[in-house]
Length: 292
Length: 135
Ligand code: SF4
Ligand code: SF4
Image 1 (cartoon, rainbow over the protein chains, first blue to last red):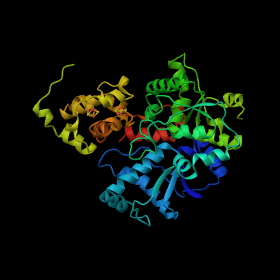
Image 2: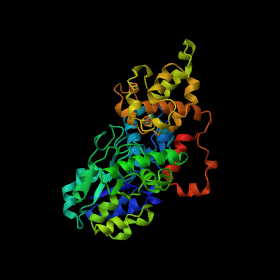
Image 3: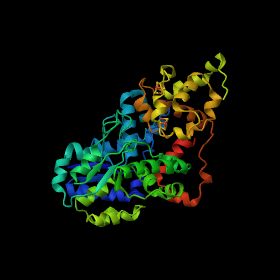
Image 4: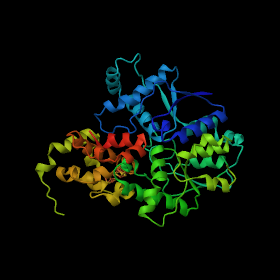
């Protein structure tokens, strides 16, 4: 199987640990990945104002690139890219007048966009096409005795029309972790917003959310929390520094991209896990469990 | 807090503008409060999500444009997912933000961020914050 891949900006920067662990995992599963040529930033957030067409240009331009690569589907890893590309796509599919205007605006592109690209998240590819039971068969290192709480955040599941699982109680990550041999922990904050971009100028909010989300996972026995969005990762991992300052009793907990755990289970080399980019060091707990 | 309501305010073009930019029918709201019950940001808000809708119905423009809440909401879409009347509250809040941003009243002052913070923040944080908080 070959798949066209849209990385987005942060996977080429702070979230190299997300990208490299995912690419190594895909390679182990036997999926050939081709990075979308000439991709541009998707804009990170879907424009909510009805008349704001200009901000749909960036995501739609990427979909033209997908067509130019002679395919009609594209896979993302970042939850924000997934949400923005998919919502912009749904928006223009439902509204041909907007699509015409956007195409006219991009008159120098060689082709028009026709609403015919499918946006797929890596998790959907694993669940629906490769299937978790087949991934289980490829596991070389079971994540035994590792208690993992999975944090979805907002953008993989909301709004319902584009979400990849149940809007209130998604379980796709738990099912994947179970397939890898881990103990999946459920916790009530798994779809509660981390505060997102408030991290730029309102650290108070982020410290409060990080505290509530992570202590909730810890109270259920979690040893690691997984994420699928580089902004959630930044807030839940790097902002633990500010969280401890505000809540001195808070105990640090490692945050991993789900792909880092997947890569471990599939026997990827430690270089591809890029733990140097994780703020709270996950190595002690992974060593304790004999995983690295 | 004392709030004056009047026909003049209810008929203010602000109400129509909010409906147009958000694409929502404000009068569909029956004030059940479910949006506020599930909103993770209420502890920092001065006007709660259900009150934002009520204020918008009544054309309480000054109160809304000056509220902290519109900048605290992170468009997490929890309220939208749960409103029994199908109202997209996040879109209404976006419309109010847009009314200010389109007058070049930026909320985020990039120049006030230290170089250290700017270096540390991932692109996804900078781009999304600029998209939501600057014109
Ligand atoms: S949930 Fe919907 S109907 Fe209920 S108060 Fe909020 S906006 Fe109004
Ligand atoms: S979108 Fe805004 S108002 Fe709605 S639940 Fe999230 S933070 Fe609260």
